[in-house]
Length: 281
Image 1 (tube, rainbow, N blue to C red):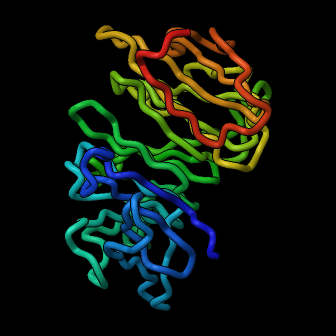
Image 2 (image 1 turned 180 degrees about the vertical axis):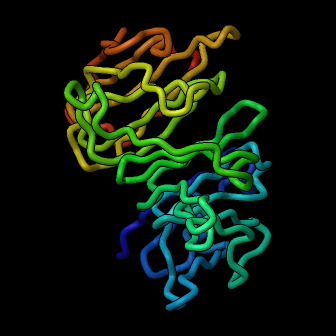
């Protein structure tokens, strides 16, 4: 069986409506697949190929955002972000290809801003401006306007910051926006926490979350949960030690922030964690 590089669930997934139980997945040397969670058959495929070799490109990240109404999805691969129309299956390919490194022509005229590396994480700002954040295994982040189809707003590196000596990190595996859209949470592999960036000032490290046991190359996903209309929110994450931890309003802390809550659930690894905002603790 070929390894799965990335998956994404239809943003309006509802088990009561089988037509919405859709999952996108990328597999090495194959087109992107659309399938149902209730049956193994493929419902459609989407081709992403190298123009020079015609070999299939398997994205390392897929974003299926509700902001695009479920009609489009976004992929990240080696120095490339693509937008697909769900209705255009087969060999038509993406409707937009956005290289994250500038072309030689742009470099000549002075437009040499960009980032190189496998785009390993994507996240859409919940605010009306719809900024797309893209992160790489090489620990760089780029911000794009107009839900990923607009101009590059800026790029910055998360490497060699003050947080490195506290929590470590070797490559971005997940990006999450705060509910207000002002702050970006960065999840690294082989890290004991998460980074908090103030996107109102591009590339400004606000602080970091400490105390998470996640010294693994495995993708260990976290969740951000809104708990009020005033922008209050919580960050929830599992660890390799089977402990669930929560940090409350981490955007209000400068520097390190220890968990506000933790609970031992089991002895295994939490590869993915999804919180319920009504959960009592």
